[in-house]
Amino acid sequence: VLRGFDRQCVDHLVRHMSQLEDLNLRIGVQPVALVESVGPGFRPADVPRPIRVTFSDKTSEVFDTVLYATGRAPCTPELDLSRAFTAPRRVSMGPHGHVR
Image 1: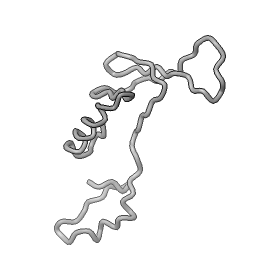
Image 2 (image 1 turned 90 degrees about the vertical axis):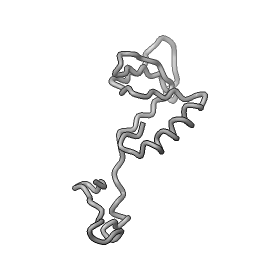
Image 3 (image 1 turned 60 degrees about the horizontal axis):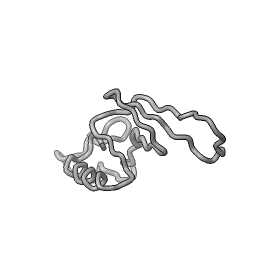
Image 4 (image 1 turned 120 degrees about the vertical axis):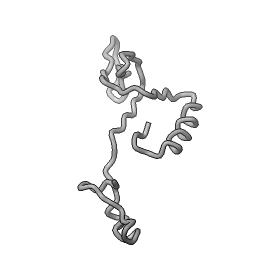
């Protein structure tokens, strides 16, 4: 959950999310395959089919909804971090705007 983020913040978030009844939070595994279930019977086009997710630990489960986030683009240009600190405490930026 939220790799690269502040561990204290992540731990707090995981504790609260784990208490939600309809949320299956998988920690320590990665999804390696997502396959839309195809079964018998008519299903309207606007009704999504269940999705079988296979994880890195070789287990799999079927879900109605899967949220899989791969990252986000940094919005650091709007922050003008070059003005945030004076030398020698300047913010170091990567080539794509990520804070180092």
